[in-house]
Image 1 (tube, rainbow, N blue to C red):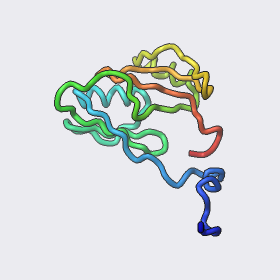
Image 2: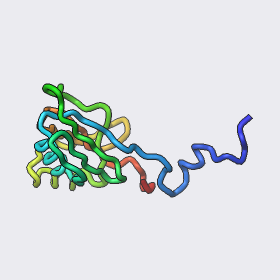
Image 3: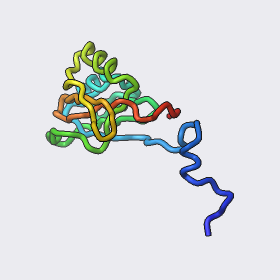
Image 4: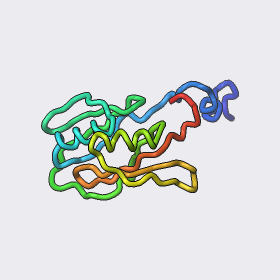
Length: 139
């Protein structure tokens, strides 16, 4: 029988505080670490560490994108393991364009109601940038 004094996940999620768990790291294998690091910096990620064989960039909330030098050519195409989220899609789209990153036109996800656009990194990875889905909750 469940312990009635223990908080349920649903109860914790409904609080107005950030969740107690986050994603620490996501990784991509890239052909040129320096070129990829500059691309992700132009998207707005914060550089943390850069070496010949790897670079670490930080996203809002502290998640690190770790770029490893690939052994061979990475397979281009959509990245399905993660996507990016911004508070203001139009402003992010414009800021990225100003930084030299071309994205697709802004579209709308008719299922969830998010606005989104895609950018393609130097290795051909296609990354989607969504409007925030936090509904004002702190993250």
